[in-house]
Length: 403
Ligand code: MG
Image (cartoon, rainbow, N blue to C red; front, side):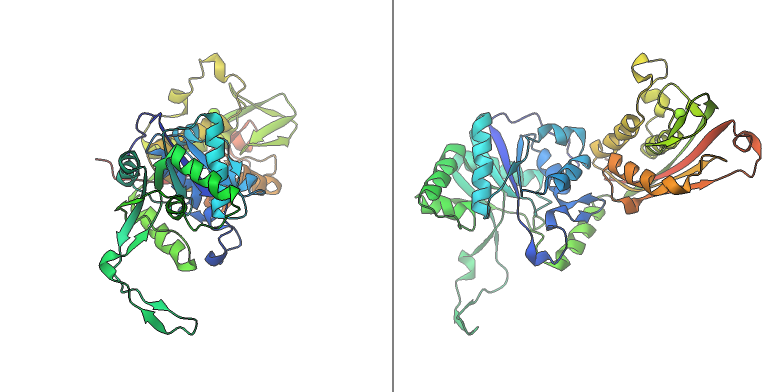
């Protein structure tokens, strides 16, 4: 997860299957959208796939467009740049995969396609490279793990009726990898014959008469399926980010003539405005500096010099989003953001939840990881004299171990 994206593999693309409803996971949300370690599960999957540097074609359920947009918010700019526009899936996994293959064929078929389940959120970079190489060599290939438990086949009454030789069994994962034309044609043939329920693409390729090679899978590449899988995967995701850091930010802007202020990304009617080069959103500026401080990467002025005319009147969500992208680019996550506004007026309380929601949206975070507080300064000092508004912020981030 710590690798920076490789140069684009121009002849490889990935179909990301994320149209399932995840009924076994026992959650209200489809499992690929459940937040884990601060991001939807699917955002972790996409971040891991992005290490390959190949275009990713998402296939999502109709009606999940907003959930998917939220996933994209949690991605680094580099990962977002690899995403093709999502296409709607079908009633079965097989029809969803075909929708993804058709979408790739429309924009220009790659030589090699990897087909990956959205609910496997930790495919390693080495596994992805093995998948590409195996497809090149064999035409069709799947990752598989040797089975450690003895497997029993049972009858309708649950009685053991066969014990296959464990040495010949493999538990098969994704990404399954193929010559694009081979698997595309096999899917089209199956659709023509109105077969729509193959459990995976390897089985479909075998049905179409192709040999499928099994290469070494990864134990960590598990599919989140049962309720208890979420905690296990989240623990692993957090264990990959042991370097916990905090940063602080502080900002002040003075009042001047006007009829509104921007605070926490929310426009609030007021009898004065805050004066600044950008929209003067003190809270977003303090949060941006807190994140930059946690990264030990300068301050808002060094990233967005006030002398640069392109930031004149700029909406401050761009500054905050930039800092968020820097955290993502380091392979990290934001654990928590906490801001305090210091002013006599306007009243912050009525707008607190809107600010939390907006900051969470900008940062691609669950709202439970964003705190907004306010205080007056009891009439003392420049804030007490209503000359301006001050904001303080703390950011807590988690990073991979840097070597
Ligand atoms: Mg400022």
